[in-house]
Image (cartoon, rainbow, N blue to C red; front, side, top):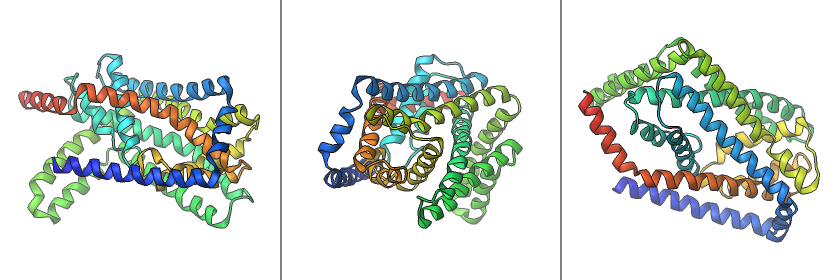
Length: 347
């Protein structure tokens, strides 16, 4: 209970921090100018933004569903939707992007499937890994344009020069580990058991579970390579939809058409900034402040940058709301006890 209370307190404090930062951004930009930018979208523009976010969510669900089917994990499609959106919702409101909600969606699937939890986790690991792999495709292009652009300052180029290789390095390391079934992660956990002898038993059990998951992930590159390839293509479409978001927004708000190099620059810098500054729920406040500087590099005014962020954030929050309602309806505590009970019975 104390641990849960601490998490709630951390999220509350980060939310307050984000609200303060967003208030500072409103004061700096002027909320009237931001509202005017949003109003200039008109109905067709707002529908286009909503369509972009909706299609992005569809690619998340379908990309993971393909992997679940390949691994023989067959559950009702509506539960796949609920699990994927619940995972996204928890990750979104947790002050750490991408990974906070993964155990939640694994638990939802495990609650309605007899598949081993390690296999379910393997589908999530593969899906997130493929997302990172498709991300490299876009950030390498964006990194090139950022490094060559005269509008990008020397400090910003240094950030790109550090950020892009850093992100790429760990994804490539993961590719080598998973595709080669080297089990580096479980080996590291076992080695920690030799150092911290007091926790040796627990670390050994954890290493065994991780090794099972690593074996299942390896199957994605051998037994299930067709589904893995299809999921990768879907992930590319997902990132493409995020990539063109500035084009969609500013075309309808001000009839401004951003070029391919400009979109690449914005996308890459935004990914790097999100990775570094996602310490408030939904990147509240921090995301808007970062985008003011990023969009300034491509000639977009500060009110347009903030309006862009808040407009897409509104539709993302609708997706978050669906996910949170679903997971609260299912009840994490009830699901955890059912899954834990079934796993004990199977043992």
